[in-house]
Amino acid sequence: MVVFAGQGDARRSMALLWRTEGSAPPRAQRASGPRPALSVEAIIEAGVAVADADGMAALSMRAVGERLGRTAMALYTYVPGKSELVDLMYDHVLAELPTEYDLAPGWRSAVTSWAEDLWDFSLRHPWVLQVSQARPVLGPHEYRSLETLLRLLYATELDSAALRRIVGTLFHCVRGAAQTVAESRLAAASTGVSDEEWWRARSGMLTEMVPNFAERFPLLVRLETEGAAPEPDASVPYLEREARATFEAGLSVILDGIEAAVARDRRAAADARSGATSARPLG
Image (tube, rainbow, N blue to C red):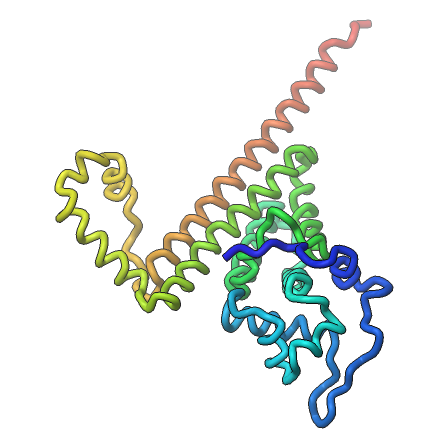
């Protein structure tokens, strides 16, 4: 399930995201009895609770209203509809991400910590991985998360053109691997079949149905034979182990590439300085 941000009324959505003038409802609706007054914040938090517990597919204004002890109609004074609510929920949970990282040990250590935090966050709120990056929410916490990463990456002293692509690569690395874990968990919950059961049932049939598998796909067999992982932790499902290993390996390769680019830039700068010095006239 893919959800596209920014599908509601643009002006109202942006006003609610940034809490600008005109975003507040005309009046607060106080409930009779012990129920608290409705507010944009209460509706957002209830929406997050629904999505965290039951997934994005379960999110509706009715479900949010029921969690608050109200009808869906009671919510529309505060949030125009589900589309705007998704934007608000997405930006709201991004506020959980840290904004301060210690650069004293170096940018690589800081970026690694940032990636680990984004990994944990993505699996804490797996529904955020269903919000497409094709159309960003454009909320304050979304921009803040980008600002945080850029502060770490500018410490490399690479130019902005290089960093623009590195930012996207890092986000894709973390989100892509985390999405595999989230979908693996969703598949097991939706089908009632675990990863181990699924793989055991199908992989065992390959040698039976394709006896010449090794001849047809020799490089795949080589990869599985030579690149086999150490004895796995049986308490962690197969796809989750693989996704975590992919995340760690991918992040390491990206950071190695950044270090190589930093070293290349420094060599080029040193060569330019050396060339300028040798070109000076004598006397």
